[in-house]
Length: 185
Ligand code: 5GP
Image (spheres, rainbow, N blue to C red):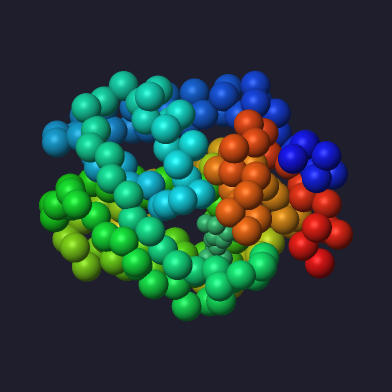
């Protein structure tokens, strides 16, 4: 598995330091809100980031997941994501923080934000581990007083690890690495 990685962009230590900072920011920003926010992970990619982040958030939050199908196969988004697994928690009149692994074109995030808005969330914030702004196609809008948090700005490579996959593999790598292009081209 490690031999398929061309280079490591963020190590396990760098990741855990950044996650700690993000959680501290979120705890500060939402400290005065009652009830505390609902943290919504986008499955499957956000599972490790979400697990690490929520354990460092010092608030009595609720946690739930949505699943969005946005990739048919390969490394390119099909541009028309759908919600294939919905929330269990009622987010009506709640502050929601969406936790994403990576924002690439923005299609997935726009769909999730629109979905949460339609369910009556009073604000929608986003905390993405990685952000690839150079690839953005859709300009998403946060809801209400929503805030945008991001772990790292990612250069335009196809990356795997820390929850991010290629063909459902590599999610369990503890770091973020660039997959050797010959493995997916
Ligand atoms: P978007 O809808 O913003 O184009 O894509 C978001 C989803 O595409 C992410 O949740 C992730 O699953 C996938 N994705 C985008 N870029 C990458 C990447 O570099 N590596 C991996 N493994 N997945 C990516």
